[in-house]
Every structure is written in C-alpha cells, then in structure tokens.
Length: 192
Image (cartoon, rainbow, N blue to C red; front, side, top):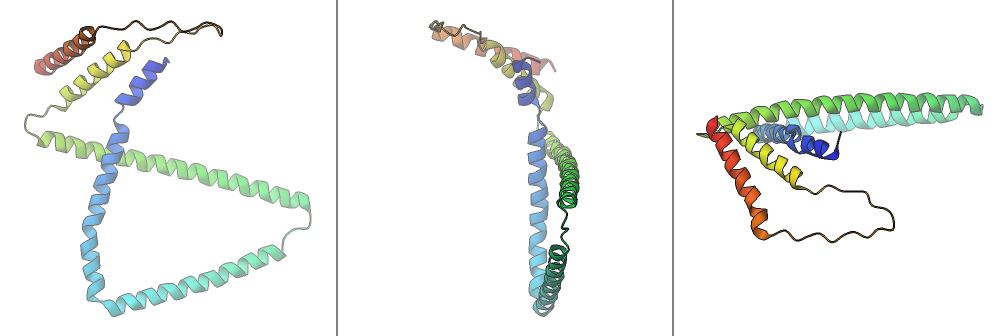
C-alpha cells in the first residue's frame, strides 16, 4: 500500500476521535456522581472513619501475609539451577499471557469508547439545526485528497547527485486549486 493511501486512511479514520469523545463523556458522567458521594460522606463522618479504619486494618493483615509468603518462597528456593531456570521461563510465559489479556481488554475498552463517542458526536451533530454530517465528511475528504495529490512525489536519486532547485510556483496558481476544491465541495454538499 503506498504511503499516501496509508496517510489518507490514518487521517480520515474518525475512531480515535470517537474514543476521545467517549472517554470525555464517561469522565463527565463519573464527575456528576462526585457531589452525591461527597454529601454521603459528610452526612456520616463516624461511619466513614470506621470504614477507613477497617480497610487499614485489612491492608495491614494482608501485608503481614504477603511478607510471610515472600519469606517462605525465598527459603524454599531450589538449589538446582536448571529447575530455577525452568520456573523463571514458566513465569515469563505467564506474564506474556497476562500482557496479551490486558492488550485484548484495552482494545475492547477502546472500541467501547469509540462507539460511545460516535453516539455522542452523532447526537451533537443532529442537535445542531441544519447540520449534515455526511456533507462535512465529504468536504474534509475532498480537501484531504487534494492535499495528498498536490504533494510532489519523492524520487530516489543516486548518492552523488545534487538535488535540483524547485521551481517557484506563482502565488495565483497556488490559490486556484483551493478555490476550485472549496467550490466543488460546496456543490457536493448542496446536491445532497
């Protein structure tokens, strides 16, 4: 696939923007819940203190258990290097598996945020009077296509060859394609 096709695909793919909009919507939703949670904490300060003390005590007991497990594991280290090597390899494979699981979960969350963002963007665009999201996308695609087409092609040159100076384009010639593209995009938007 040519670089310009990859660049066009990357620049026209709205999924990252939808994921960003979805993340913003999710953050807004969670932040709206904060005042209610703060009021609940302020209403029962004694209960909140009791919960915090219980959580701290639980964390302390877990720490003691973890220290005991680590001490037991260190004392039970195998004397045989090959057995230790096999266990290290097994552990590394388990971690690779976990990393793959996390990658799959991250992709699922990304896709969910993209769907949520698309819903938010679609709702916002239909809420505007006279908005036509299809026409806006077409205008962006036409302008993007022209930017990609107007770029000069890169040619391979021998190692000793010097680059030829670029001829200067007249200023009026540079403005004509932009006007023509804007007019074509406006015509396309009007015809729909």
